[in-house]
Image (tube, rainbow, N blue to C red; front, top):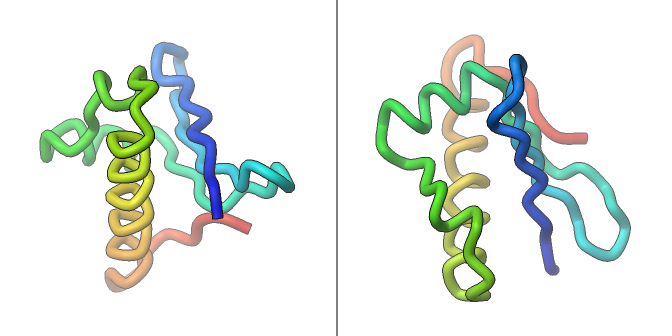
Length: 82
């Protein structure tokens, strides 16, 4: 599977979505709280988001999915994706 990262981080209510490249299906959504948590942990790599290197983007998508899964597993974890 191939994914796209749709990130709007410089707006009043930032978000980051992971989309399935072929279908456009939204696989994961990170809102402002999740983005802030990633930034606080140092796990949101803005250079990676701007990269055109497939290996960098693949690793970034992998880490974002893992972050989403970890958040969902927490007690009272947020729902994400469709």
